[in-house]
Image (cartoon, rainbow, N blue to C red; front, top):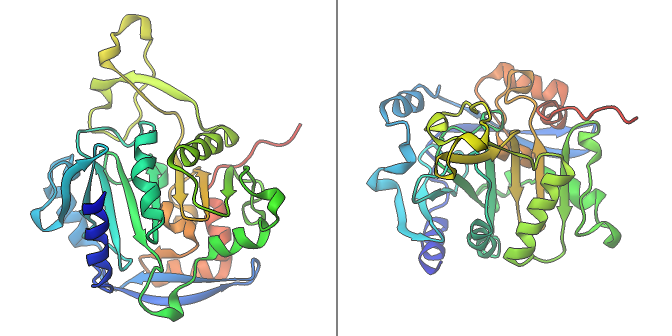
Length: 316
């Protein structure tokens, strides 16, 4: 852990080094009364697409030496730099030995994440294609807070919304929903101090149950391979345990900060045609064109994000 903290501290001293150049637009969500930031890329991401195509399927399994920060596993995770970052500090905690992104997170993962929360990091996890995952190897994204070196751009809309709606002590440490995502499947737990790794993991499991997203399916390890396509469930009585992998049945976005944990079960990865991953649910969105920027301004950032979540069934 000391090596990871030292690497992160070193990167914080070089804030502003981004792999993708963007223009920043401050947008007011008039419905929610929140200030958000829209990052519009200056250059098309063709170079990223070419780079990913040229890599092996499991690109995170052999990171470029220039991206390697802490390669000695800590709780089976290594730390590498995200070369396609749009935030000033954007890193990846990757499984040292292959574990699929659809497999459940474990207590050992929270034992790595929890100390980082104390040092100003946000953790994000894309579970499945609909949440914006781009690599099959398990990886937890780490974002340094504040997001940007420019104070004028340092807004955290989701955190502001949670503080506004869940400040009552009676609403702490228990699952709740947010008005901005009314009718959509999500949950958040706000806490006044950073939980222990065990408690953080319990919050994570509790939220999955709250969102009815905790069910797993058994699939063939061979069928899962390095694909993102969730294989058909298999009958466990006809296949050995060594050949089985349990994966999430549904895709979701996960955010963890020193003040809350949020899960949103995804219905689509591109609401209104705008790609939204877990980091988008901070309330700050990334777009690839002026047309997408216009949609966000017209519709509202949180309306776009709400449309990315699956609808809740009608109450009986």
